[in-house]
Amino acid sequence: MKWVTSLPSQEEVPYKFIEAEPHFKDVVRYFRTSDYIAWGSIATGVPAAMGLF
Image 1 (cartoon, helix red, strand yellow):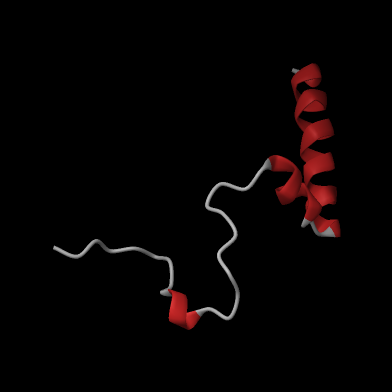
Image 2 (cartoon, rainbow, N blue to C red; image 1 turned 180 degrees about the vertical axis):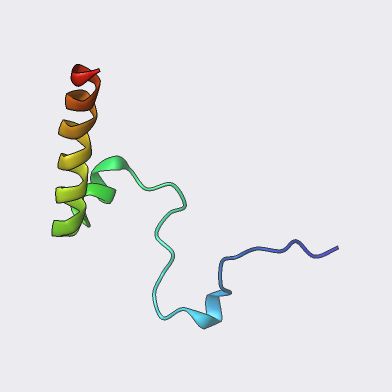
């Protein structure tokens, strides 16, 4: 039985597969400006909402 995967085969991608579980610093390095805004809003909004309760 062939295993089904969502990853494309090596022939279909023009770049090398780096790693399946990237390190946190590698993920943050590729953040967009909107990602920083969303992250900051959630980080300040949730504690503020809890304080209002």
